[in-house]
Image (cartoon, rainbow, N blue to C red; front, side, top):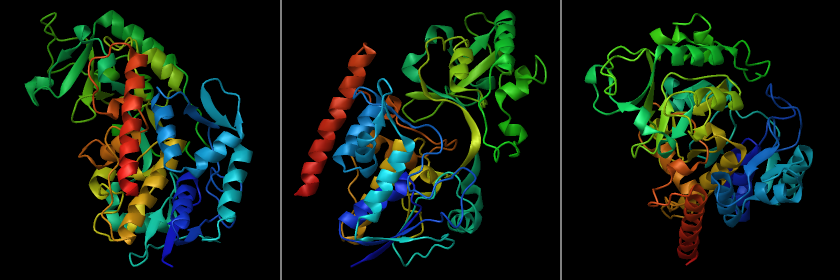
Length: 435
């Protein structure tokens, strides 16, 4: 029986270990608890939920619901347990966090092909098939070893990310397309402010409520280039106008003049289905981000693919260091799963545990790994992580990464069409895989 190492018994690690064990592999699942706890973990149980107890929307015509249905069809252990211990949460799937962690732990411990190794894993060995799923607080000797394999500049320990919005939710009648001094073609859309509009925006920005940080995040160093937009704004009313909102080199064709200030929107993907707000990394609460940032001209009805974050988060620069099967480039048998690979969210992390295990088992069986169809949410997320992106930010499930489906104006109908198309594609994929 082939020996496989899975490092970390969070959601991703448990999914990977379970899938591999069920396919007949002997899995050593390394978990450092209770010998060592990260600053955010308290329980000895596996798949511990340290933040929210919600796995987001359940309805199929949502990005989160679509991905969960794909995971269900791929045999997710976490989703199965979550359904058994769910609590009322409207249209979301939320769980009793203790029951969930205990349920996953019992399932893992009951699997005869999984042996739990209660110790900190510190050094990677490419001669042993390995999946690293140590999560967003990866540190110490293992982080040093990952840096050795991927390059010190490719492992990030602090996530300073700007919000990302769907391109088709913007009002382009209020925007203009131009790079500063016309350098760079049509790489940027610009949201222009007049003086009164900017001052009202500034007032709301500096008074908006920030998100709570864990105690171990409070003293994290924030570099000048990663300054939260609200912190920069508090230096003075013109600080942002001399920073990411500077209007120099721009001319608004609707007025013929330089705007008082401007927010630049940069393509997040090659197709231009998503844009990020350049220089708008932030620590505001998500609700506050929506309230304040929809004051930006053209963003009044913006749909946020992800909100900005400023928190401790170890993740790899996936497009640079991982191949399209989540394997570290330059290695034969070391794969990355979960949030460390560059995804955001509980279910996304679990799904990438499934994906890494599928890819690894395919190669161990002498088959070239098959890629999930791009019409699926998981397939599109995998492609996002492996596509060239010089400004890579972690990403969660969202409709903006899926291939366009055509003109369906009603959003609910459009999203339902995305989901139905994706599940049909997955069904055909699984049929071919079983032959």
